[in-house]
Image 1 (cartoon, rainbow, N blue to C red):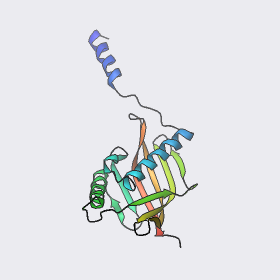
Image 2: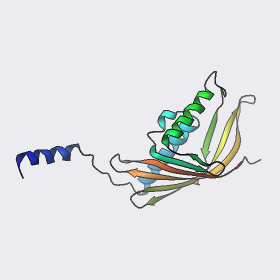
Image 3: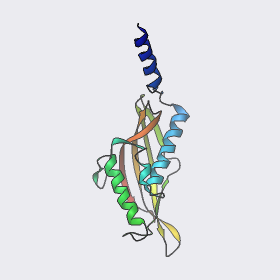
Image 4: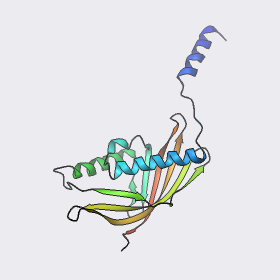
Length: 172
């Protein structure tokens, strides 16, 4: 091999991102749980659409039992959240609205899907702030499945698909 070829090979080796192996066991569970928390905090309590692109694949989509294909891609989700968060801001159509999501303890199951990613299944309940009574009112619940894709060159997971189903009213 010539000196130029060796130099080029060395340069490529140092600039190409190393592919990381997908975590297993507790590390897998911990990373998915952390991403789940970040995702739902951005959508509910935090109302922070800027946090979403980092968590989602560009082709992310959400299928909902009430709305069918509710979100066709990452850009649509971010745009939707930007509109919702602007409406919650002072002067917005829904100024002061607050909601939160709570994972049902013990409901989460995370399964590796080969070395491609992981499937997360869980249940959660939803609350809205009742300003008149100064309390959180439970308003419903649902189940969900998330397909998390392992990004080896980023050494992390990104959400590629959500299935949201079994939506129902709050328990009495």
